[in-house]
Length: 155
Image (cartoon, rainbow, N blue to C red; front, side, top):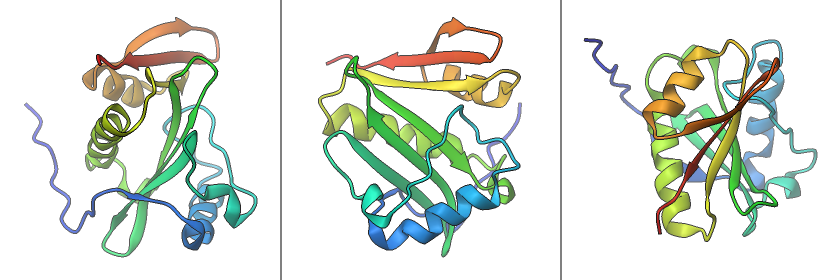
């Protein structure tokens, strides 16, 4: 069996505020030629766009002082949190996305009134599909572009 790689220096997730705007935009721009883990990522135009609200927030994970991953979450019309995650290429395959997703699930289950979480995955992104299955998500729709996944919270 594969052993999980331990990443030393990895901080717990933190809620993003305006002071993180440039780091978030840089990660998105630097990797625009590399597909993100999930389907649609949103670039915040202004620092105010990343201030947390009840229905939308950004989270980040740092490795030492470098931003290793970001998650954008927003409440959709069906009462679920729809999220997207980007892991910087140099930090992929180190278990960061898995750990970050576990923290996101726990955070949303305990700190929001949402019904669950959902994400879209680009077609052929089997690593993301395997991660979502491992975390308890179910595939609810497949198309020629990709697939939609969701996990419902038991309250």
